[in-house]
Image (tube, rainbow, N blue to C red):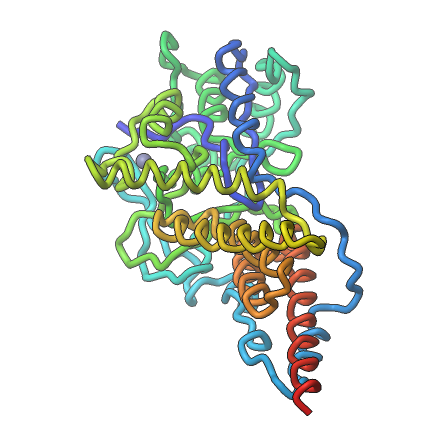
Length: 404
Ligand SMILES: [Zn+2]
């Protein structure tokens, strides 16, 4: 039996927080869960910082930085992921994956070659994409209309594409009976579709990627390419199974299982399979990460601290940011790297420690580029990075002048 879960579009990717679909009749309990999800996930949303008055383009900033007597070597050798410069092909092969059975999970998607961070695993245009009718609070999307729209799009597909859609797993809720015909299509759509910009899309290949609470890939929706793109967030060896997360990850194992239960499966990933001390460590770490994000993000600013007390607080924030990064790296939660690196960059910029500020901004920018070169978050990091490099340059020039 295939155990793909339902409503996997409850994604927590930093670049594109997807919302769950509710085009079935939403019960008050489900609505509460969704609301809790959004309440919980708000800390992951990008909050706005003041628009930075820095007009120059990043490239010219980099050029400026290397004209300094104290050149800053790492930053004019920006490493862009291969897919950005090679027409999105990954390691020369368009398909570094195949679908095989995955023990205990039905089917899964596996690497047919070794992939490096940022390599594209899979990019897929939606087989079915519909513009949903208005979402009604407490009711959800009207099922009839969704069904009609999905059916219309489905019938326009070629036979093999239709077969691929119908082969997907439809998760049934307690008391639901096995569906056939249009009801089956609606169940499949409900169980596998993702928010796709302002529409809802079904991606039959991506839908085959199983969940892990320590996933090795992440994904985003590209409006320009009309594709959902899955990329590696760490090195993935040939033969390894690809995984993404369907739920927020900064929860204890018990809380995660509860979330996943409602989608009809029990997670046996390495984080969930941990026992005793290891499990305790992982649970504590995830809570610490969540607390640090919740505590530090609302306080992020580039305003200069003016008093001695404010300076001390700013210093402490920078230190806590580093602690946050360490915890995320230890827990192996790559989905949160870019957000944490950004936080460390900004907190160091605030205390005018420009070298680490530029370095962490660069790290965050690289990940943002990997995820989505056109996203607002990427553009923001580009501006911040340019600004921090320029400030670093200035501070080096000042030091150099004062020695003469
Ligand atoms: Zn798990």
